[in-house]
Amino acid sequence: MDFQQKDPGIRAILWEQMTELKKLLEEAMNFPTQWNSECISPEGFAYGRIHWELEGKSFYKDEDWPEIYSFLCDRLVEFDEFYQEFKEILITLSE
Image (cartoon, rainbow, N blue to C red; front, top):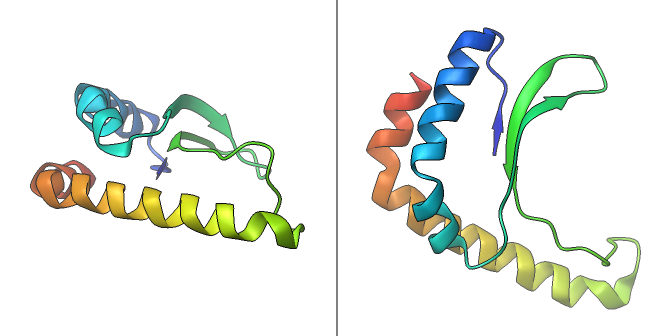
């Protein structure tokens, strides 16, 4: 989940409010969550990112595909469950 608002003040407010949901999000995801409020894109713009990473696997290795597919499916289902429960808050934050 990236926070790419051009206004750094708005991005900071959104990030702060997401950290208030941190415990609930991490419990819903059943996988270690990485939080980075200070990412820089190759184009040079700042953004925040919450993400989940499956280390040691590669899309370029056919033998890794089943585990990657399972990882992505699990994270999508878990995030959707979190989103359905907190969507009003998340929508309000993005407006």
